[in-house]
Amino acid sequence: MAMTNFVSTLCLVLLCSTIFLGSSTVAAAQEPGLDGTYILDQPDSDNINDVIETAVEKLNFVTRDIARERLKKLNPAYRQVAITSSPNEISVTVDNQPPLRTPAKGAAVAWVGPDGGKVNASMQLTGRLLAQTFTSADGRRVNDYTLSPDGRTLTMQVTETSPRLSQTITYKQVYRRVS
Image (cartoon, rainbow, N blue to C red):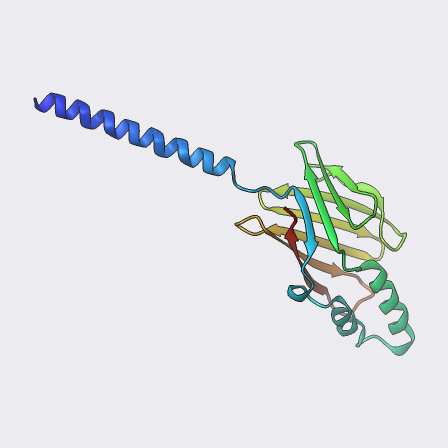
């Protein structure tokens, strides 16, 4: 009788652990990925013009206006971001611009930025984080896209550095997933 109870208990434990492990694998597979289309949530996002004004206020009056206009061209507030990825390629499309496509493993490609300048662009996707890096003779910009745990909110943290600026520019833009 004791042996039968032991076998029954053992079978129950094995069955429960199989169900538990199986359900956690399914839950992990259903976790939302970064791929999708997102719309700007302006109230939750930083005001880019304010950030630019703070960045140029310490420049001398001769270069301030030039820097301000250049930074505004380089930092438009994108209304929509669409991300698609495969094991070999990542593609990011902002507003109605042509998509930026790069190898998924972070190799840089030549690309033309929003101001018409040539830059080297690379992207690397790690789970819920997409790091997008742009480098040129004028400086470097990194867009770190992070997806919220529920998969509904995409936050783009921008960090821009240049030897021509007295300080680093940082701001965030918040996007909501389109169903």
